[in-house]
Length: 427
Image (cartoon, rainbow, N blue to C red):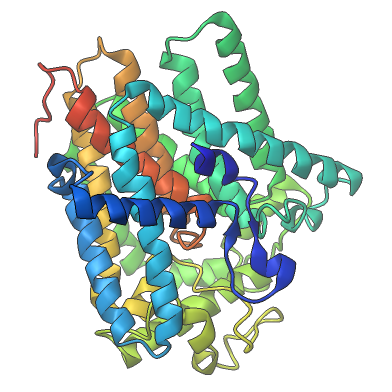
């Protein structure tokens, strides 16, 4: 509980004192919990075998196994083993141990509230700094520091919790006071999302809304799949035309929200968009160079510089390894852990979505609160998976704590809180 409460307010020690990067106070607490877990495992198995055998758990274990293999073959073993160790304390604590905490149904909602409460503190701080500087788009990039590195991670987590706040308001068994508080939370998160100027967060919420409509209206999966396949074919057929059209868009990021939205598709002059393409191109070249093991988990930022070309570089490009990662939750693992690294993460994403959809579909409408909790936990994860096309934050506590705990909530609801007559139609 203390880890969840402290996560939005945590600060990267590297920003304070230099040296090794560790998030305070959350990661020391997670390390302590992980050590206690290992000691307890020697005495007995503290995790229910049903959790260990769950498809989401199996996908996670496969991903961890391959991260271990690629760390052994890494170009920078110390960096990779640090990355693997951090992933272990996030996954073990926030998925496996949390799945046992969630045997108590109320704990699922408590986890949500603890993160939201601290996030609201960060929002209040951010909006105050933003207001003092005239709510400009430029200030929106840094006014959430030191709690978030920049507006992209801040926006991603605002989007992550927006669906669950709405779900608790709609279906939660709450008093009028709590309902009013939730209405206030939704309003504040909405304002914060707009002022974050985070285009990827806005897009992720649109995608989550589409999934919500599909689930609510029970649109046939074959129709959805056909629609996606048709869209992909059209994108392939008209790729040149689309690229030519995008190249004509020269609207850069702006204080004007309409212009800022238009800048999403600017691949001609918008430095942020162009640098993202540069990072993706470098990641792809790195994968082609080392397709099996990759360069090692966590090594992208130290290895990508030689793979940049002069034509791809932008005014914000760097060769010093301090410019962040691959800006993709999918291309990053491809460069760092090879094909199996990317596929194993995709397996986690697909399994979570599949189990979440089948779980939601299996619950009778009379169980409104459980049904809504499943949908909104799934939608929160989907906002991140969509956002993950453009950025990656699972190496930070800000994203890892909610991502793995939301996955744990879906598993716990299926194993411990599903009404007996409501069993998933597909397993």
